[in-house]
Length: 164
Image 1: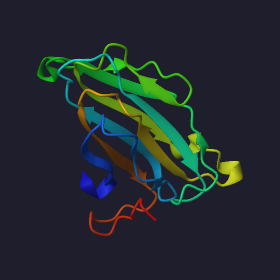
Image 2: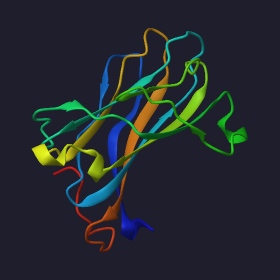
Image 3: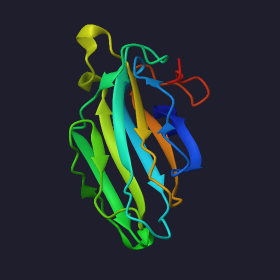
Image 4: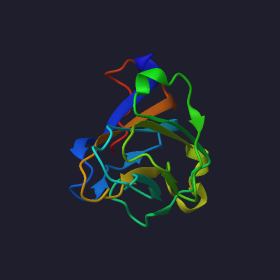
């Protein structure tokens, strides 16, 4: 399966309450699809739900970044994720995804982006997802990018990088 995919870190596990959590940009020039995977632990208390924001740009430096509306998202949010078998369709609002009352729950959220969703007419090929500061109560979280439908599939060590 890895010969068909590329995996890149958006950001490694961090305390989401320590500040804004800006991920790296990934380039979809060599891939047709991107799955943004956000994974977090439950906060011990508090009501500050995470918000994932998706942006697009013309290069991995973030040139001309602007909102990228989310059209496909799925969530698993519960105190015990091992009991949740199926995803629930997400409720994106423009270029953001939040699940109400998710602060004190663990979560796996998936946002799907097609390369065709980007403003390709104006040269937008790169995507970034950020998670806003969740306030004062610690919530550990990370963000991964899973890129699929490589324009040229090879072996895992030869697949195109998504970071350049």
